[in-house]
Length: 242
Image (cartoon, rainbow, N blue to C red; front, side, top):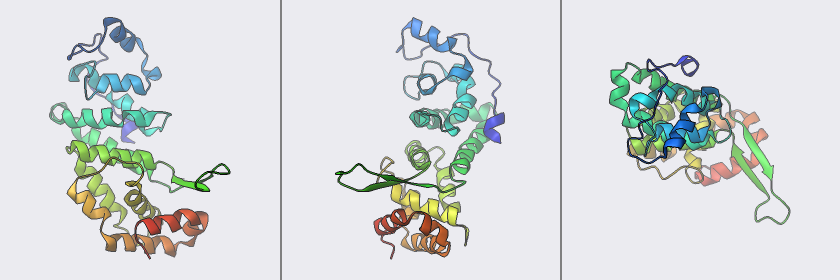
């Protein structure tokens, strides 16, 4: 796996330059004193930015592999670093290329998608008595998938990875997991992600013929429908699938 073996040539920094003069000295000292294994979302956000980072590229890139490992592990609050992670690798694309790790970084993003969408698990939560709705269906990892695609589209630099990922979900003629994920992402933009303005992605998820084909694949595998009948009923209705 790329993420597990990803490393950079830069050593761990001994100082953080605070290029935008946004941090107190004692905070920078505490940040650097945190062992790699104890890094949490707030540490990675401060280190990578991409807005008001605590260090320069040369200082902060050391922490990039750890950020990917934290992110893909779906640790609690890992979603909090999606903007920092995608923003950093987007803004510093040229530096990553100069360091010979740009394609490795892009492979790490692809691996995130592969891990998150290796299975399709619908969680059916019953709401408390008296709630406006009786249940809430959600798919495991959707927030990670949707938010990462939204950030890739917003920063634009690596949006081709998101496009290819979505196209690949509909490339198979009989893969219910991939078809289900395509439908879930198309529906999730109404719930999770920021508005996506990238034309190629919009065209994909609004392609009714593509949506209908994916729905047909799912329907041919009755175990998917039987495992989450309310989810599929609501999803098909949301996407105008008969």
